[in-house]
Length: 548
Image 1 (tube, rainbow, N blue to C red):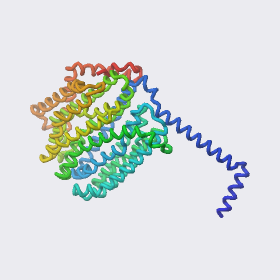
Image 2: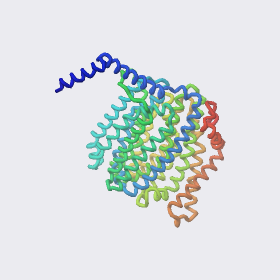
Image 3: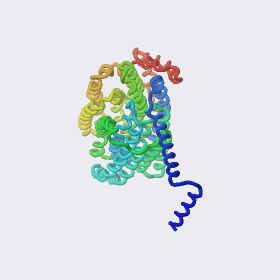
Image 4: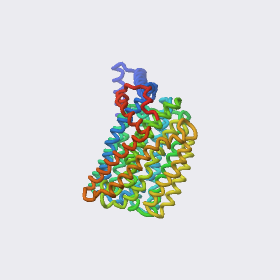
């Protein structure tokens, strides 16, 4: 029968006048057309020359769009924190945090800094892009395998058998994020920040919705596993829909060796910094157990919710823009310092509110049964003085291609962070939070600023100049909030009303303190130029709006 089918197919081809040669030619034409389409698509994403004339305008517009969308994301995340804190126990969050500390470290390994290299490099070829995609995808598979293999070790180390089952399942997320890395990098390279923001928010909302549904269904810790996987799937789908480039066959590894070298140093530094920053959770879980770790993890989540939702998207904007300014030192310095200063002005007052008003904030967001988290959050609030500038050091190192220095600084910072955590560990989660925050403020932050400012357009003293107004604002907010709680009877009010009063007083205080500083007044005046930048009326000359 198979022979008859082949003969029939041959007769059909002969009757239609189609020979094997003409069929091959048609197939070749089709392949050629597909390649042309793929090359054209890649060229649109890789070419960055058209961005130069309005680089600052694009940065500001991208930043504003990102901030608006991130506001939606913060509301969604805060809502999920409020809901999940009432549906799940501290032990559930503590057990998942034991796994999450390693998940995020492997997430950095999976990327290997290759997506950052795609954004940072001035010239990237289609062949290199194809190879980078397959490298990231392969690293995603490897990360999933490593995470699954760690399951027995984690279950033994923490003494939690449930980790043996949830760890391999949650590792599936790496398969999806690995395939999305280069698509997201191309959107960042083209400064398509509105699309990126929409993808992030959609993925976040999808993950949070899935987690809430699972928690309502009584799945316990598995709700957090569902959240992670749903977020990864939604991110990959959004990236492939928004970026129409499709990968081809990988090319020679030699073509991307420099990318791997750049990304390897950056990734090693970030992994070291991340592990140092998350060693506190690993040690608290091992030494004190799941419930104290849950209190610590939720406090840290509450602190980092606004910080990361400002720093990560603005970092995407800043890295893309600064990478195009490395040949203009004055413009680079002004833009970098302006971005960090504005970030610090937004975050430091929030830290002041947390330092003096952590009790009602925790009661409102997490609920009364989480009251032991209040002193942890209060100590963590001190870290907001230096954290914006500390996070932004990676923008400086990577945009200037100083990743070997970034790695060395990361190793030193990690050693100092680990020493602080070990000093605070015997005193519980509160002791760890206090030791980490105070050491960062007095030792770790100054050392890292000195290392970053030894060369390049941004000098060490610049960090202290731009942090003066935010630090004063944060201290004033803490004083005002403490005074209100000390001298004005708010106990009879609903906790939501109490937090609203404290937040309003914090905002007014921070704004007034900002006006006391010349740099603060300059920031306020620069806001008047935002409409022109958002319309695109101001091109490359708009640096004056962000001068430091």
